[in-house]
Length: 403
Image (tube, rainbow, N blue to C red; front, side):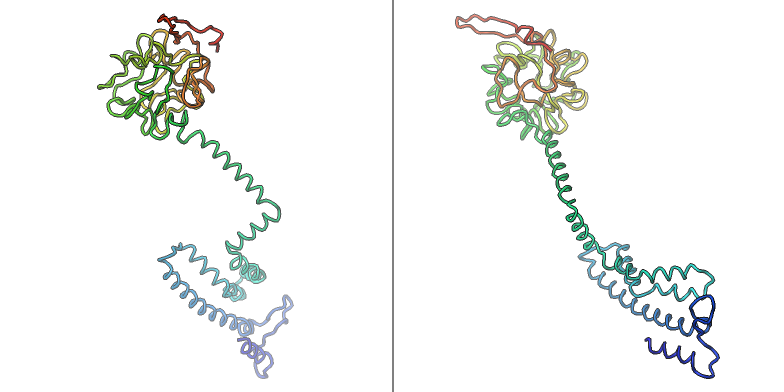
């Protein structure tokens, strides 16, 4: 290619009888071809031929690339912008920046001239950026830079700290068991107590049998947070836990009334010999709060307490306002003995009965965390069975029940 161009230029410049000359350097303004006709012959025609050849070769190359894209479409999807970027890089590599060099002598503007000079002067840099600096190369350079200046270890430490914080926060969620072993608060099937985990020692189980809150089908938590499946759901319908005359009764499973009184008299949770807050076994002795901490009774939508202290979603509030679960001095909620809401939440903490050390399965405390101390004499009555059959009733000292 250069040989014909040089031969034509020499012929025009030095052949006798040719009136057209190249006139290189004959103008006083710049070191360039002074004759417009000579410019076309010595510069325009060679550049035009090079551009036409590049256009033909580029077209063939792009057609081959397009065919390879069509073959690979079944295995790899490539966006239209990605394809256009490949075509543009190939075109730049084929030398199409010389188009500005071809047109600028024939236009009355300096803009194409400066564009042509800048692009061709930085041609090597542009080829490096467009063809060499791929994402893989950039990733390796970044890794080497971070290793050189010891930035990778700091990032790893920050990531580890973040992961540790995430794991720590995650411990508050999950299954939310109040007591390990067989007495999971909301883990697995969501029983309040399972196996032989009794809320109070002796004959004072929360529920009959071996001390399950809701044995068999009566799951305390899990799913939508029903206290007992079947006919005894904690929420739904008009079954209000507390408030006015809305006794928690429904269907054949009465929460209040009959022998299994939720409230009434001295506030028994279960009738017979399994009284939770009456008879021989107290539901809460000592400090009196049911639980502290974040206090979710169960995961999902069925929170026993937390926030405003709703027993379950909707309008079934466990506590709040005047809706005392038990009348008289033994209020289940409201006043100082809050079942849920505020600081007195149903679950969380470590579940201990209180200063009277009523035995509870696992290692959970009945009152802990942000829960305030509740006056024991409010709803606690201690009975002692003597050997001769007599029963003595006593209340704890005020010193044991301070706030």
